[in-house]
Image (cartoon, rainbow, N blue to C red; front, side, top):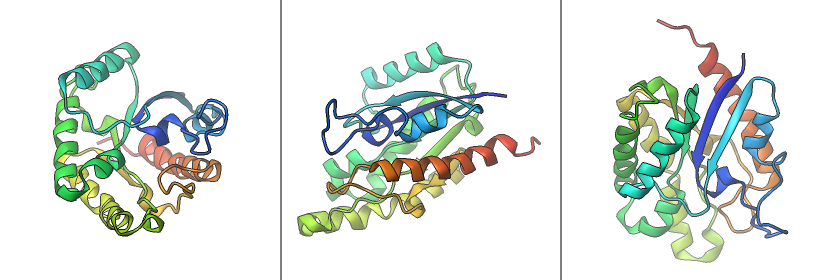
Length: 205
């Protein structure tokens, strides 16, 4: 059985190449979404966008509504966002970012394509940044980004969505301290295979 999965995220879902070669995007077979899509078990719809923060305005939310309705039926929606929010509002700390994510999840659960089923959403805590080389602000980014795992795990428990903590996966980041390297994408895809297998083979009650 092939499972259709919509992957909604930022540049690390889009597959941005921090080295800037050619188009600035890694080849499909190198991105973690493309690696999963090459497997017989999955059909991946890549909805990553460079610079995307957790949607808050009507246009962004309506745009996602359109995507979900267009791609329905699907088996799972993955959400990996928050890094760009951290970079623009780090002085507010993780509680503000988690609150924004909670509002977002509450909104999308109302979309008819999801039928209110929290078990069709996978919330992924992004890997912590590696920005300490850029000074004290970089160190603060890193410190706060390490809180994604705990904050999103709590949010997943409260909302009933699936959860994965990519902060524990040792994903290799490029010299910019934010974007996955090709090795990082491959490593991420391997861990996602395990997560997805657990989700789709879990017994139904």
